[in-house]
Image (cartoon, rainbow, N blue to C red; front, side, top):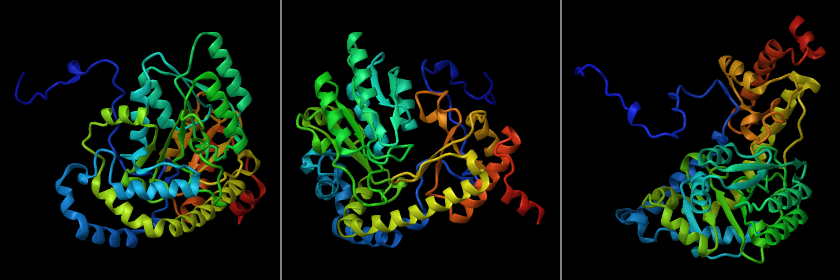
Amino acid sequence: MSAATPFDFSALLPAGLPAPAARWTGLAKYSFVGGNNDPEQVPVDGLIEAVNVVLRREGKTLATYGLAHGPQGYRPLREFLTAKLKRDAGIACTADDILIVSGSLQALDLVNQTLLARGDTVLVERETYQGALTRLTRLGVKAVGIPLDDQGMRMDALAAALAEHKSRGITPKYIYTIPTVQNPTGSILPETRRAEMLKLSRQYGVPIFEDDCYADLIWKGERPPAIYAMSQHGGVIHIGSFSKSIAPALRVGFIVAPWEMMSRMLALKTDAGSGALEQMVLAEYCAPHFATHVPKLTRGLRAKLDTLMEALNEQFGTSAEFEAPEGGIFLWVKLPDNVDTLKLYQAALAAGVAINPGPEWSTDKAFAGSRLRLCFASPSHEQIREGVAVLAEVCRKEFGVPARIANVEKRARS
C-alpha cells in the first residue's frame, strides 16, 4: 500500500453498526426540526451571573471527578430537583433517588441497557419520540404501538395488548409513555388514565417508563401528578430534562428510580460523570429563577404556536389538519392521504425548509405517512410564516396539495 493510499477501515467494522452519519452542512433556512428551543428565551444574562458566582465559590472542586458529590451528580442540583418535582409533579423523593445524566437520551440508553435484550418486546405510544424508536430498533427490540386519542394513550388498547401478549407467554419489558405533553401529539394523559395504567402495570407485572421531558412547557401551568408520584408499588422509572426548560445544548437530564434500578444504571454509567460545569450553573440559576423563567418561556412559545397555526390555515387551508397541543414545542399535522411526507421532506429540504416526516415518529408507518411534526420554538415568527409559505409551494408542486385557495390567488394577482 503506497503512502498516498488512505487506510481502509471498512473491513474492520463489526456487523450491526448504524449507517454512517452525513457531514453537518448547517441548519436549513427554515428549520422546523428537532427539539431546539427559542434562542431569544435562553436566559443568557442569568446563566452568565450563575457561572461567575458558582465558579468563584466552588470552581476548585472541578479538580475532582463528580465535584466530590458522587456519581449521581452535583448535589445542589439534585436537591433543587427534589423540591421542583414535589411542587410540580407530586413526586416525593430525595436527592439520593435522582441520577443526573447527559440529557434524557443518556437516560433512555441507561434504562434500555439495564432492562433490554435482543428479542424483547416493549409497549410504546403508536406515535412517539423518534430517538426512542431508533434505539429500540438498533437493540433488536420489538416496539408495539398502542393507539392514541386526543387524551393520549388509550387504556382499552393497552389492556388488550397486555392481555394478548400474556396469552402468547410474552411479558413486555416496559410501557414507554410521554404522558405530559406527548411527543409529537402534544396531549396530556388525564389522571384517571394514569391510574388505570398503573393498575394494568401491576396486574401484568410490566413496569412503566415515564418520559416527562416536556412537562414544564404547559400553557395553563397545571398538570396531573406524575405517574411515578401516583405509584404505590414502585414500578415506575421517571426521566426528565432541562433541555426544553432552559437550553438543549447544556445536555443535562435526570432519572428518578428505585435504588434497585438506580444501582444497576450507575454501574453502566461509565463516563466518569456528566458535565460538571453545566450542573453547577443550572443549580445556581434554577434555584432562584426557574419558577419565573418558565412561564415567560411558555408565553413566548404559545405565541409562536399561534403564528404557526395561522400560517398553516392561510397557506394550506383545510388541507392541513391539526389540534392545538396542550404545551411544548411541536405541532403534529395531518395532510391529505396522497401526500408522502418522506418525499415531501426531501423536496422541502432542497427548497430550504426542514420538517420531520411522520413515519419517523410512529410504529405504524402507513398511518403516519401523510403526517409531519413541526417544531415552532426555534424559528422566528417571520421565519415561521415564510417557511410555511415555501412548504406549501413545494407540497403543491409535488402533490397538488393544497389546491390554490382564494386568498393565495388574490395575493398572487395583486
